[in-house]
Length: 267
Image (cartoon, rainbow, N blue to C red):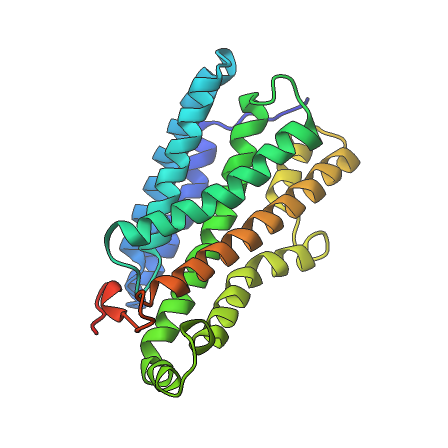
């Protein structure tokens, strides 16, 4: 493959664009300059670190190391799900909810793709397993965070409505059904938009990367279609699991609304 190597100077020129954006944010008093710079620094450090890790994994293909890397990615994704919500479940309940939903969706879809669809040998070849799981976790994480945020915010804002429904004889499942439905819908909007725009508005990242690396365009397209379908399934099922479980956790065993389980909430 005819891959053009990038020098530190090339990356520095791109970094200047982020610095310029931070400067304009400061000038316009948007308050985003610190977040931009911290995010840019995190991106640089994290990607350089994963580059070192992947190099080692590619040279020493072992299931134990691939599994450990995948679990670390899952653990960090669980933390990011919590960090992006305005109102979230307190303590381990909130963290475990995101991790569980991503485990039963992104991990299951990744295993299906590696074992059945791609069929590489060994199936845990890090060249395929880690990038695939990373794309699935990243998109599933966003869907779950959006869905749970809409669910908890909606329940907090409409707590009087929910409690009125409960007093009128509805079950907890019935009282929060419309908010749960809306939360699932919101969580799946980004991936639906991404699929609808793929190829006509945007060229997705994996396909672009393969083409830049010299792969045949049609082969890159086939892989991108596969990835889009896998990401959609992982995001959709993960969002459904997280929102459904989250809606149940808003009530106790006697079907009473318990908003004190949310950070900043109260009974």
